Length: 559
Image (tube, rainbow, N blue to C red; front, side):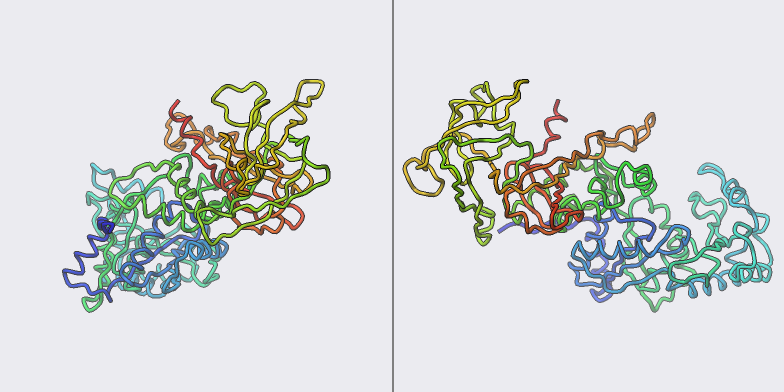
């Protein structure tokens, strides 16, 4: 019996709260994305954490969109985020929006002005920033800090009504301009924005800042634990201060706690940098299979289970670290190995002619769909006199360590017969056009004959020329050559773009793939895992390589 996984530090926090008086019915979690872009692999870890806690404790998990910046947010991103979370296999209890709370947030802000805890500042953002001071020196109080309450209330009303231009006024909390935590030095709560909002239209002309919105939204939803990444640790003091202004002891008080990011090697996840990749046409869109977005990973062929297993395996911690992308690739292989049907596809073909095989004959041989799944069954594949094999599966002058086909040497064709190389047909430049061989008619796989049980060291995949299906194959690789492309001080991350991150080739597949639909996964035997791309049509199949069968970068990193 395997030992139960030990609790991570976040689960310890929850368990301690349950001992200190929380009941399981008090527990509520949330995932709060801003709809200003597509979710990426970093978000996937947070999704798996929060929804995983919901499953573990049978507690609700809200999906709350932090939609407080209409200049960057769009319904397109809302829809994409919902699709990504559903695809990962999670269900949210309530679909919420920060904009649901605009009126309540405004009312609370008016109360704070009335109580002398907030004021309208009429300075520019640059001036306010300069007055904040430094971590080692106190800030300077705004000349509007003690503005009469009635004047601030009147100006705040004008801001709300859109009667002042953007940038003329902001609402600031009155806290402490000498606080060691610079976020506590009279933070901005509201700014004027004359922008169309994807949900509220033009109803609002003022929009709340993140720090004012987030904790109060948690409170309104009665979220028990608000888990953020480590960069929000300095914000916790402000989170609590804002809660102090509205907290009713009869209600549950949310608590913010922080965990470290898990960064992924050979990629970037900054929305600004991902946008640059799209705008500069380095990639073909947000769902390009080289992108670390969930939509890109999905199109690449990663399964929900592989991403969830990846997130669970790296866990949560208190220190940031760099996770090698090979671990994510391992999770994909491990999952796809269990469920992907095996098929034969030749990507760099050379013709193999079996000279003693009957002309015009086609056999339909039985092939196992997936040896890892006893219920996967079998399929029929055509075998004939002329086949395609991989060009690098033949070597004219082979050494003793080469166990594939060469002249005078025997190998087995998978699910078929043992063959022996006999001679070559070349063009005038010496390029191999055809490999001629003979086959042992008694060596058919699974026939039970003595010849079929004969051991040979090499086994090759193949495709019958006559029935071969021409397919487009997109060989994707890592987008960056450098493990940490965005941490170099001397070089821009764009300098580390891998020029070989995509190679498009024509391959030849067994005819069973003619009915493959977008999203179907396969193992191309001896080559890797592939998925049918959404660009596919009935007459033109397109396959994306998800991952090779083995980590091809491991050897490079060792050299």
